[in-house]
Image (cartoon, rainbow, N blue to C red; front, top):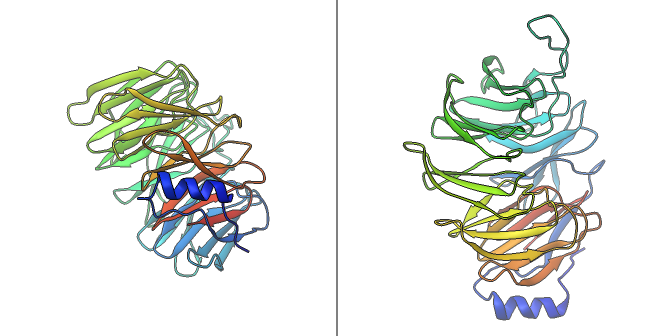
Length: 350
């Protein structure tokens, strides 16, 4: 069944965002075995995501029909990562699982509950976010206060990096041989992705969200309301601003703007070059934890309750909304004019 935006909102789309290919028609929807708990990843003609009961799905992105599925033993978190012909994902017990994209066959797994520290004490090896990939390795942050790197070929441990006392509760970001890590106690680190050695870093006054790398710069936001821009070459700070609201999402950097969501349900757009606030939109729908998406002149942002809001990227004015029965769960994805997001079920709107 296909759904449409309310008629009045479709007219606003046509008049205000005529350059956008997005019309607000639902292309398809898919109901999994249990609510979706991961973000959405798109690769080729495939959509990847996981659920509360540990079911990992591959769907055809054009039809929404299942290609294959795999049953893991725990809830799936974070955005799946595609590396070569394989897809990897993380589950709540701390295990990383690698499957073949072609048929979902098992390749390898690594990590999991049962680790011990140097004194022989059992540690919590779980996690609450997904993976990053690059340079032939898979990276993940766990509740044992360590960042782990595994071989993408066989899952063998390549290195571990010990963080501060509060650890890391979000996924790291890989770019050009470097790994960018934001810690819960406000420490920001740049690691050599091959060795795990800390090269440089900085910080914020609160827990740091997953960083974003774009155009030779790294952008990171934090719960203290700050957004930082740092030129990677030479580790040169460019600007720092505070939006005076708890930022709870990874920054979206696109079309000369930075988009973040907050704990009070606000969507805020900053100028990429200066950090100046361009606009602010209040969803009045609770905490925003899913990363907003900016594409084709449109911002898509959803909170823990309410619909997926559709905003004009130039002005922040609402131009539509996409029905959501239980709020937006996990990071959405946008590919070839189609938005994929979950509200427990998975939806594709074009």
